[in-house]
Amino acid sequence: MDTGVAIFPTHDAIAPADVARLAEERGHESLFFPEHTHIPASRQSPWPGGRELPRKYAHTFDLFVAVTAAVAATTRLRVGSGICLVVERDPITTAKEVASVDYLSGGRFEFGVGAGWNREEMANHGTDPRQRMAVMRERVEAMKEIWASDEASFAGEYVKFERIWSWPKPAQRPHPPVLVGGDGPGVLDRVLAFGDAWFPNHAPDGILERAAELRSRADRPVDLMVMGVPADARTLEAYASAGFRRALHWLPSAPRGPVERALDRYETAIAELYGA
Image 1 (cartoon, helix red, strand yellow):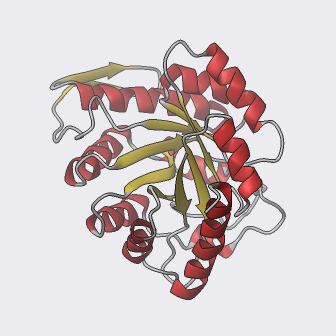
Image 2 (cartoon, rainbow, N blue to C red):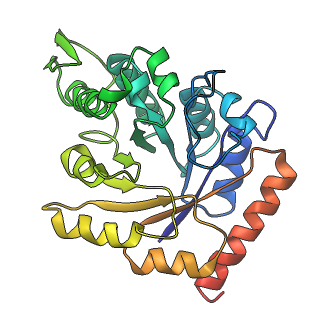
């Protein structure tokens, strides 16, 4: 099982390029960044992680700026979105950004996608929260058409365009891996409909059983990846035994010292897993 890390890339923490170099130098396979364009001050939508929303949510760099800095500072590290809130993005522009970073990195981009949890945030971008799952599917499918076709058209309920040209195409063909985030009741259907992998957050219950269900339902190869694993060898072993290909550990949005100490703890658990 490959190991990687994820971090909210904030302006007062270690720079995206620096954390990318650290991850690559220390032998990790991947680095992922989340996305929030803003946080509505009303704070009506409850944060799934608890009562108080961490400060970092409103202080992140733009996702694709952070990704570009990370791939420019490394040569082997896979860098991805964990996750890109496609319901808040124009699909033609996002297709261009994904293709550009994948092309310039030599095919090292991983496209994690999701609908998000903050209803006011998506509404500020013009998306009806009640329709967000259908919007996400259409936008991903429209982007795939742009990446695959020299002259692309798409006619959906939420996305419509006729005969467009858009280059470069991604280095990875037909497109970078689409990793479907989330763990809601319909997520496995979405993975099977338009994803190359399921990419849930770590949870104590249910993920391994649902992973087995996904494998039993799939009529094609579907990868399993998990975000937010603790620095714990037994947890890592459970995911590895269940066939997960990648496990990510959250790093603190902090200066270099705390980030390195978090990496030390994570790598100790990895070494314990493999008996090093």
